[in-house]
Picture 1: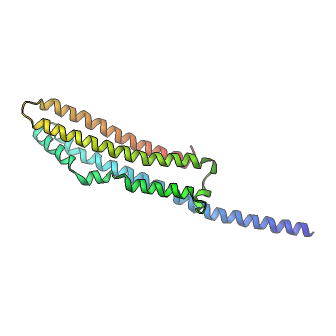
Picture 2: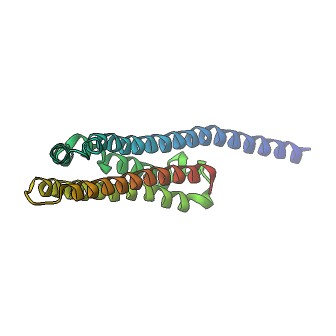
Picture 3: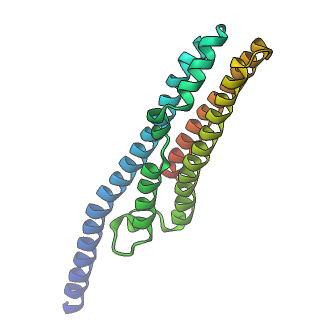
Length: 194
């Protein structure tokens, strides 16, 4: 009989540990999902800021003088460029990565241990997207500023330059939309376990 009583106590203690683990892991998992959503929303907001900023440039495509002015304005727009700063998002991704590495953080134990490496890799991709897109944005605005100079240079084919701007903006917008979709896909893959 004493053996059964010991077994009951042991099972009861194990049940308490499991309930405690669920109580810790559930909130840690939910916090992780909230953090992922917040990172994705910030990425989307940064990219949407750029897409909105391109509207005046696109509206000026039929007026070379106005187009040159809008291109210069875009190239010198620090507010839009600052929306692309990866430090904020990379910092948040780094915090999540650090939490996943820490043996003292409940988040590490709230996720499938077999998927931790894949989750880390996915999070690193998000940080890499931001850095690559920031560089792409800088190159894009610099090229458009050079085109503004060409438009303002006598003898240049302004219509051809405007068409080049139209094409460049279209490609850049597609790159931004693709990046947004990729980041959403990464978030979904982490949450779904894919």
